[in-house]
Image 1 (tube, one colour):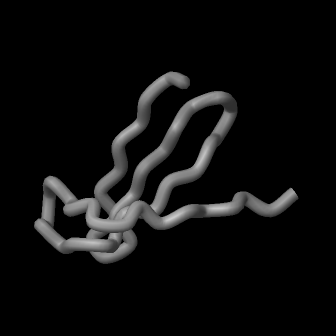
Image 2 (tube, rainbow, N blue to C red):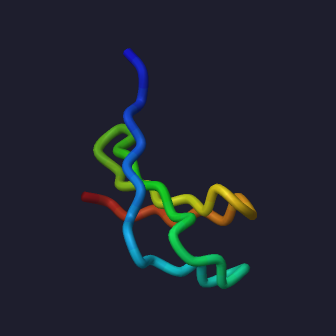
Length: 46
């Protein structure tokens, strides 16, 4: 099954400051947010 990534409108990457570059998806009941510009990731148990 393919992972469906959703972009977060207006979000700014804390690492590279790029706006509208954050994608979010769920991986093993963990929310993953990643910047598509620099690859910075944040994970949070959901």
